[in-house]
Length: 430
Image (cartoon, rainbow, N blue to C red):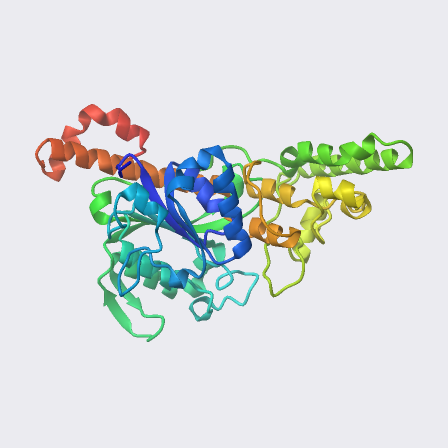
């Protein structure tokens, strides 16, 4: 097998448990590498790629790299071999500069999160510099960077200007030296850097994420990147979790005596509160899931304000329940399901709230699994952005193919030459 412009390749750093990878995969990208430092999340990627039929391409050609992205070497050089081993089977040779279609990454959010100290560039976890280095090294056709909404705050305007200048050129203050420089840029056009709300894309959660999309200028040419728009009505927590809640309470409803009565009472109460919440301002949508970090205690559904919002949805947010099977085996129903304040969510239900497909499984203990879910980029949002990028790249490849076939006509003539292919371009939203 050899590379083809019909196959859009990607490399993703800070891949986590695969939220962004799933979305980009659904958008048509094939992953050459997924880089993740957390061993549990890396194992999640390995296990799902190994088990799911729709990931057979990645099973053959994708390197899941468990390690620090600062040590990641996608291209050989400086005495180091490339970390891409499986990818070479598809490419037929080592990956070369300019031959990757998309570099993506959900770089760590704590430096810019409203829940943290917002140290920005002064936070050691800031990996914007690293993804810019990789963009320089790889020169992919497109770059996609995801972060929390906080990166768009006014206090980070100078840093955002620097990042944009590094990509497309222009004047900016260097974050280390403090000197204003005229940066040459890496040949990209920053097409969009804006906030998308997950609930606008079918995710039953209020989760605003800032996404930067840059496309190489020689690729973009006279084409236009179209930012994704809302895909439909928001999905409520009730609609998202009703089936799984019925499943969790079912074993106890079948029992005799008081436990069956209590199970019915608690399930009915959850349904009543969750349905009642649909009539309120937030339409019964969940607050933002918070993954937390290893420095803090066990998993829960967020700070006090988030817990109060979950309480209005009939859910106890002080922890995460055992899985449906473990709850029955460990007889932990009093903790997990029968609290007066409502049931706790399982990891599987948190994954539904985050927009993961039902067949995606998580590695590690319960807390490690929940953190993977809580820190993820919702797959439906990643899919929407990925589709918008893919549309432009496919249209650019078609444009260049026609130009080559017609002997290298001028850019103004390309548009005329493509008149017969208008339907294809319209389908690409360009």
